[in-house]
Image (cartoon, rainbow over all chains, first blue to last red):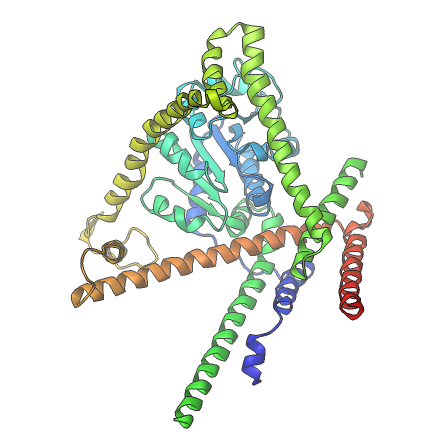
Length: 281
Length: 249
């Protein structure tokens, strides 16, 4: 067996180990590679910056713990930014399996920023119906969520003063890991009730959402851990996303090297077999 | 450190390492974590749904506020349960008809408006754009998604990919060139999607490793180190047993 053949039949556990080490080492010994801000992430940041104090900001945390590494840092950064700007924050989720986690992140950031539930922000929790909830909120917010996550009636809450439905929302962001998520918020929300919308999503979903960004259907997009790191950079607060960027770059480099090596061995084997068949003939 | 946080750290660390152990080989620890994941997520969903739907949105409004009109959707929903009674199963069709009718009515016009019409509008943009002070201009900036050059690329991409999926005409001559162009655009799109998928999967690994590093701290009782030892020990014992068994046979 030639060297190329041996390498192409290498135990895949060795590759797992290489990828694991390429991830672990930069996490233990960070280098601090520079992070370039993309226009789609800046779009979200700039729009929140432009909102006047007291504007209504809706954050829909449409993900569950399976997408936590990518979307949790995004939600922390967005909530910090919104609270820093003294926006009225309405948080909710369309994913029942993410309710507890969504409550945890909203409560944690609100406490950190000294905000009061019911006065500065509200976590509405989850309501059944998926996309129908968005339509319901577009007609009557209090019909879709008669009580918040803690069971307090939403009607009369200071943070919701003057808000009747989605038309009163100044800016909405859906952090989606699937359906219902960003697309559902555009189709059943923005397109019908005309509020400004942006999206945050997992890396897997990002290519599918770029057409919405180009056409102006959403005004910004935070894609995956990379997007979260860019937002943390814009906010000037280092978090888990920035810490993970060195590891991300190292694993990408390792994968590129592995792809190149595999191709080199593959083509060398092909050439060998072609030469053998020629000499045999 | 509160005891619930410490217990949470041990459980999270253990389950992460047990799942990762599958990368070496299938083993009972992986099975335990896998079954726990399925069980816990289903249990959590059932409890949350029961509390939010049955208690908060149905029971309380009817009993406490006298909103009797809610009995109508409850009755339609309850028809679904007739599927468990073969003789009355036909009643569930009314519930399905309601769901399909309302769902289609809501989704079809909105989807056509949001995706098909808006995307067609974006695909056939004007080639020349009005730049203040410069008049009509053809912009060549490849990095700007709204540039004239990108408009042409998108138009060629959309047309050629659509032609590639047009099977009524044989792809020969000029048609072959267009179809090949379509394949090239598709390959680029698949490559971009795969690149993002790799990035996403690596992000998940980074997330778990970040937690494992955090939980290796003495304030948590170093669960990462202890449970890593346990996982490795299990894998070693399993490998030894697997080696002894064939010898006995």
